[in-house]
Length: 400
Image 1 (cartoon, rainbow, N blue to C red):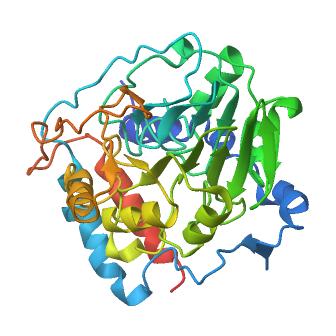
Image 2: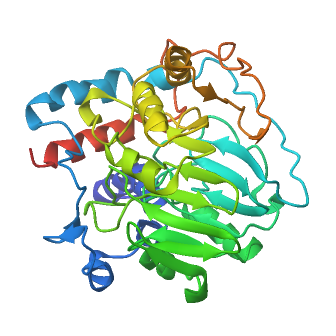
């Protein structure tokens, strides 16, 4: 018969098995997913005019988070209002029929900031994220609110992959690995992100790193890295790689991809130098007073569209992940109200829908029927309450 000491040891081991197993699963693959260490990044980024005092900076003062004395309210939102951003029902998906040859000007939106651009016969894939969870961990972090509208392997050959910055909802390791196996196009990225890609074994020949105002040419397209107002970081050290928007300029057509950004007067200068743009893809979701400087709200996106000289606006950065506290459908509702006031031409495709920008369809309301949830929904969008507790702890450690 086991001794009391042996029984206690067995019970202790059993009690610890669950948490230890969970922590092991949560940490699985973490060092790789986090990307390059800042020591490896420093020699690559130190020469940039945007880099000083050990990190990248926006050109205008930009707090990434509200002052410390307002954080208590933000932490309460993490605990109490996280469910508000969930959809009230299934999100309808479209199945794009992609032509063999790229069109003069078309776009297929896959959800969030992921889209396939067709510009003057070339294809550019922007911020592709096909992963289930935008997090370094396979166990916790925001999960998709809808499945990818098509398999990444089914994409036609693309001429370039553009990345706006290194946050998990814009730079996704599983997607990069699939693109390595299924595509041959270069990854054209802001300065420093190439070091993440090198760690993930992307060949040097497929990495192009640019600073703001620098251009890389693919076929007949000029891909220019342009200013954005945001921040970067895949773990505790922030702003070690550059963030950007992109101007895609062809012989006949021009597209602006905003990625993720707060409003900045720099949009007017980008429009003057590289516009006017036939199509703008601008973020409208994940806004909050606490981070207004780094995420645009729908009205600011409409203003940016005007600054850029945009003709057709396609809203991005909404619908796919629960990253803020506004209702799921609110961003597009506010955007269309703003568009009515200005007379702007907006297209709102379902995830997976392809739009002929030269003959854009009328807006079809597919989101009202989905609606927004009013009750907490266990596991959807966030993964678990562990994330909220973790974020609370991390926010409390940030300097004021």
